[in-house]
Length: 336
Image (cartoon, rainbow, N blue to C red; front, side, top):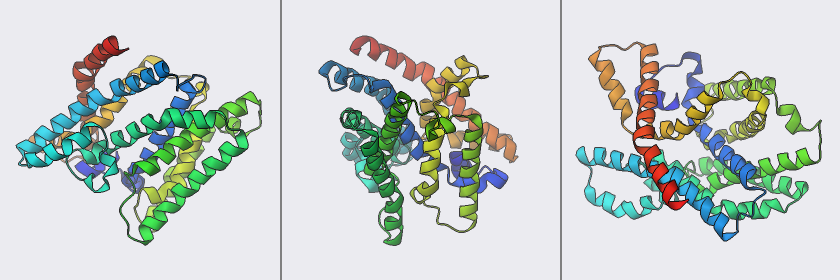
């Protein structure tokens, strides 16, 4: 919704203020990634050489083939449209090893406005085994203290950046690593809470559909009202609302009962193509949508919304089945 409004000028009516701030969802993605990985690896000796090797290979296989494909397609598109090939030659080594987010001013160059996230998440994956080793041995009180220290840094830093007009911190891997680590610690605290069988705790109270609906309402209304009041549209500045809401949402969605009534096959398929769907929005698919709308000489808003979604969806399905899935299958067979 955020990208379709940004690139394709879709109108979502009373939700426009909220949709305009859609990029705050990246905080949720980082939290969720750290949270899920912790649940998978907390009981394993991840620093064992074979386990460490397998962990890194699995991340490489799941991320890099699609990343390289999208980066190549976008670069070809840029070069056809007159971009300087020397710029791409110079930036290639940095982008190939996913370090472009370290160079904050590289964000607007080429595909980096969309794939900076890959750089941040790969840096988090590299450091994850060591984060896991630290938090695995900490008691609840120390974990809570560290987590709230990280939260404090994330909430205060955007004000420093905004007041002193510093470089934007949206794609800064340090702050994204803090969000990722908070997700790791949140998962660990929930596990310790479960082991201690604290039935009346906040973790247990949040695990209901009513809680999820209530938190979503707070997020949507809070952001909509804040934007309407004139609070600057700085994505990281809105972490004061987004961060606690995404933390609570993650706990809500960890309850398996939340899946009752949903088709697991559909959920699994959407899960498989979700990363591809995100990456497809880096490509100039919005221009394809515009060309289709121009051909039919239509500017109907509902059609624009559905068309932009379907173009990205079919693009994701096409790339997943014809490129991503075969490459991953081959690499898994050879490397794992």
